[in-house]
Image (cartoon, rainbow, N blue to C red; front, side):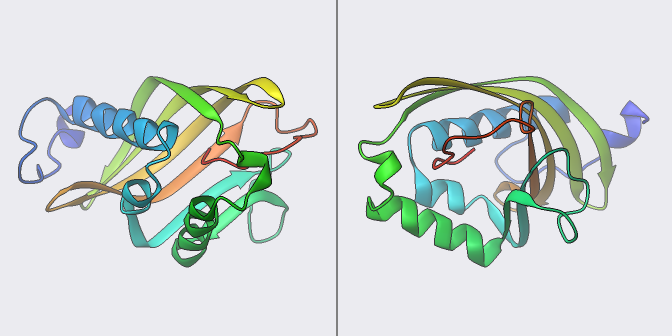
Length: 172
């Protein structure tokens, strides 16, 4: 990938500071903060209408043909957020305390107003069951809009997804 090419993505209004990589990093850091603080409406607003949110199971490569932990379109993302906001997810009563570290952010590709990136994410979860550490390799497709980046696709590949997962009832 040519760094000169990728830096030509049009800059959204209001975010003319920093390189493309720095702007992508800041977006991913903000998304992590919204997830950690249970800012569900703000997190949901980051998604495009044609969005896909995918957490594959057992190294699956095709969500249409193989089992997934999560495989949501935009409508289903909205349902998931609504369920979390009701307080009826008993595994989230009280809500988990979360802290994420987003690292190793890389730009993968840039095409027609969209940027593909990947990052490693480490999540600390504390709840009534105890403490859990989650590690993931995330892939993102971000679309440039007038207000900044929007998420078109997010794939969360849990490092230990081949093992039983007791519960995953927060925004991964």
